[in-house]
Length: 165
Image (cartoon, rainbow, N blue to C red; front, top):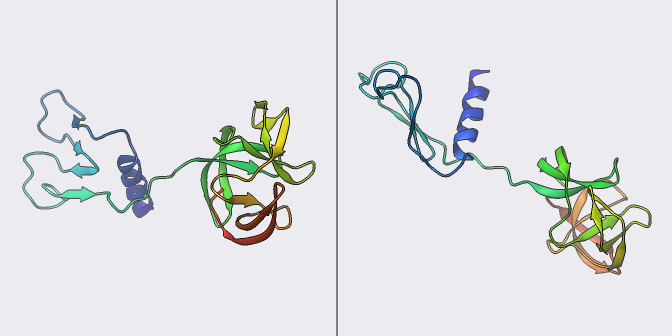
């Protein structure tokens, strides 16, 4: 449990806004105030160097930051922000979105098409067939996203390895 809490804190520090120097706690900047600097959490100033990590620095350089994407949610038939995913699937969805390139999966005919009028993760006006710019396409056969190795008319004729939606 403690290990999970430490990893969560490191992830939040590593993926937070640009580095800043902030003190927390009292107004004097001494005593038990923790200092953050870049992706590091420093021990309170004036520590003795024993116990509790006083005087040490913890670096969060190896913690990956999530990179949200806009992914097709098959159950709802619309696009939502994928905040956590892997292995060709999204595990946690956020608000509705539209892919940057405007190429969306149409569940009605199982093809990708340009969307002329997106609304709340859905398309109200379909255009020509397309393929997502990143080459990652939803497969209605297994419900996962795969790298498409052969695109034809908005469909994938040959699916490859899983990819991030």
